[in-house]
Length: 412
Image (tube, rainbow, N blue to C red):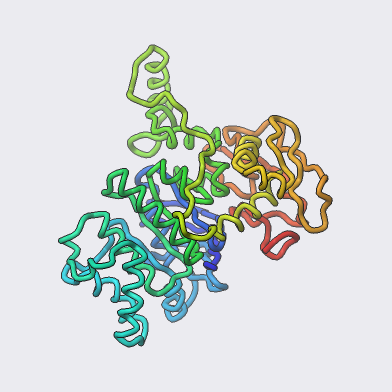
């Protein structure tokens, strides 16, 4: 199973320019997560900070008990071996063929024989659909093939954590769909923790188990995919629907005069090309390719989410329950309630018929439909999360984790 990544209060700036501040979240082990956000919000900087290529100003990033922000260079070197990274452009060496590109980390970081290296490289090239292309140079193959070659190289050290920066960059929608399927299949096969940075809304809606979003130098939210996909947060609604009207502008955020003008133009019937359909809502998640086993990370994730179901917004609760098969609804002792209280999922030490109250009542400010306050980063301007029930596990979830402590009741 992949490693858990715990990030607390991470802050990064370049000179006087803050990139993001006080980012707190936990990447659940063996699950697929994605980070959304407008261009220029520092998503790629976030990935580079996670592996120590950039040093944050403050905060913690803990992997296997090691804080990479403060650890020694020797420990950082060892922790980096847990990572595989797919960069936006593949970052292949143009003078090397695909075989040598993929073999490079093995030759650099291990003492394996060339026979063993050949076996591993051939396995990863086949896994990414590049068998037979090992002699080609990066300039002789398509963009999609370069992405897959970069992914094969990221896999040769059998990483526990895979970081994927804009996998759809430069690809058409069809190739993006293939890359998305490949990521799900890889998670099925090696059970690694995966974090994807993307602008692609279809990928974000269908691939990850967990979703987050950066905006205005803050983490707006991070948690189960259903929370963001059903959110009423204005910036989330605008981003998912790809509309001009909303807080995001060409320079990341708009002033109030611009927003008022756009609203007045829309009220007057002016069409700015924005889609009328609202794409928010929980859609079916991408499944492993036929012939592969059940994705273990997806089962762990559903068990975890059902334990905290009562702490989630009503729309997310309904989306989760309606996505379950009848057999799963019986297993977790829940059913679509359409406004009635949600039944508690069966857990050790709890009666199957115990009821858990749905999150109800007014939600403060503009953060309607979000995670509890201790799980959501505050946004400048006074927006804040809903101080929801931390659950009945005996202690509140870790900030940003979206799930109970691993050693708590019902934990892994």
